[in-house]
Length: 118
Length: 115
Image 1 (tube, rainbow over the protein chains, first blue to last red):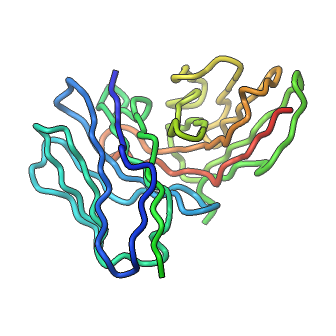
Image 2: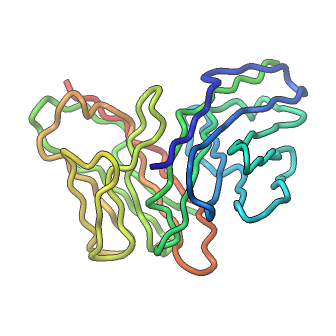
């Protein structure tokens, strides 16, 4: 079974600064996806960024980027120029690809609560 | 732009009562699922479905029942509520197969308290 570990339960950072959220995972699979999801207070969870394991290039989405280290099984999220709207719980997730693409094999970490301080 | 709609948003039950959490999506997604979110435990999969008439168990299925009679709807039933089922429940859906990218679309959540 896959496990996903987020070792930082809570973090806070000043507005406009850069912050990095850590995530490590344990798997023997070679074909998988990794995700970061954002859950703002009292709002729906949304996808922030996605990384395919077969791609060496790190994914980026505007101010959000990842540092994917496949050998080390590490998948950190960097938020640049942080904004008040980035305050949320962030979940790292691992998905093994299977017959039905793999959604049922999605494993979430325990989350990191990020607070952006004005 | 409804996406995934869950009802009710809040519910208080007494031990032993039954109830159904409703979930509907308007994106024609094949895959639908129910998660529970508990402090310090992330999200855990309860049940899922890959199409109408097809359901399967996730990580924590005990005490819950599901059915999928249509593509749009995926209700979650608690047959005899227990305090251990106090949690926040999320419904999520996605595309499957070629061209899918694995992204899950979530509802707003249903906070259930069992006394």
